[in-house]
Image 1 (cartoon, helix red, strand yellow):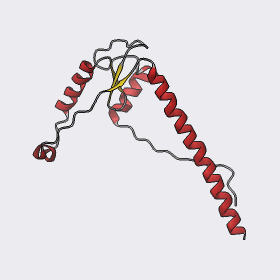
Image 2 (cartoon, rainbow, N blue to C red; image 1 turned 90 degrees about the vertical axis):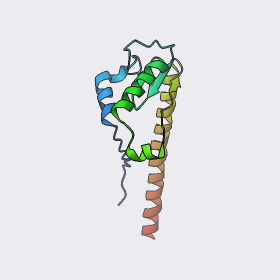
Image 3 (cartoon, rainbow, N blue to C red; image 1 turned 90 degrees about the horizontal axis):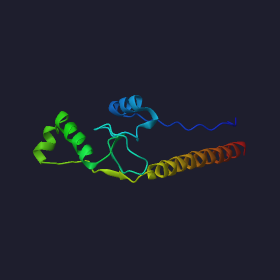
Image 4 (cartoon, one colour; image 1 turned 30 degrees about the horizontal axis):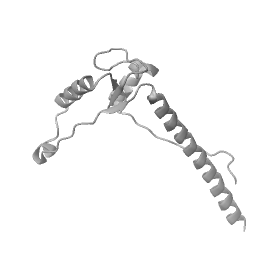
Length: 132
């Protein structure tokens, strides 16, 4: 029996803090600094940290990192081996984040289309092999 519809299931489970941030901020989360709450103009740099946190400067971002480090001390295993991890700032230049987001969405949609085409082709191969 041939299935006319192809489905791709994708499971994403964001952390609770990123869900709260997205719920609080909505679609405009890239427009306001998470730390100082200043509006970030379209032509200004943005510094990302975590899943959905954006900052107007490295200083604001580093303050949030320090708070997170205070609230979430490293595990004893990490302390024993003296592992140090400090997330690197991701700098998004002005409105280039729209271009980056567009590219990601384009690649994702191309992946979905390719997956559906492969699924359909594989279905035809299987059905013709079974009919022989």
